[in-house]
Length: 256
Image (tube, rainbow, N blue to C red; front, side, top):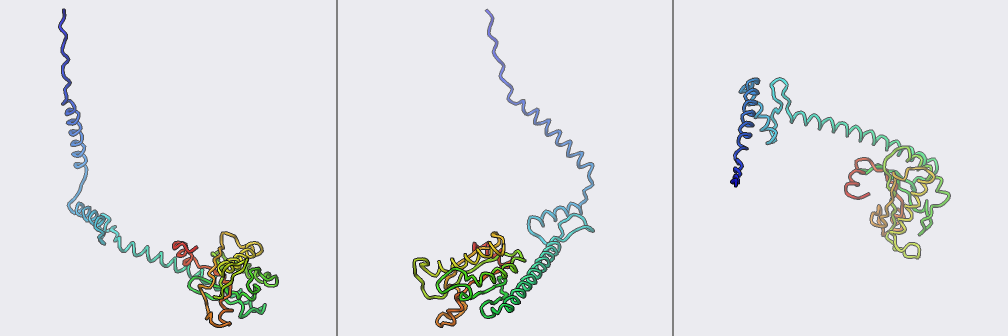
């Protein structure tokens, strides 16, 4: 009867041969690379300085070489200056466009005898076209008067010559209103601004993506609510042509 051969244990150290071969190849590779390079002490120092500047935020030169070295701080300052110049130029161009729109609206208002009822002002946020409520609405109502609707359309056509965002604001005095149609001044201001928007959309053809409405009721008065004259000034609709800078700030703050 044959004796059963015992299996020889597997050599657990065979992986060392592969590992040693790999180390040998890597060493040979780096020797060849080192032999073919001409790294000088000065260039090595430049590399070290460049790495240090990158990690520590140094303002020194970070591009290797002497003649072609670029000062990162100077480069960044140049880019910032150019960007500021472009922004200033764009803001000036937009300001001139708003001035042109203001001039055209002022001329139309004068030709139609609406001075005092329709005013325009260039403010930090843009061009504000303010219309008192007696010109557009009956007391406590939100329907735009037919005789003013045509004038509103003509103003809208002028506004449609630029592509800035337009915010239509409904404002009231501080006299409370409470009826079946408008429970408060908020609803009245909202209904008025919405009706103005519909006319500008449907007839003046201003794109719907370019306009939005808001009701401020009596929270943003422009005159003293303790007098009848002041109350009359506060009851108004403001059509605000926002400049790009203010519109961006308002979008970030969630105001739109």
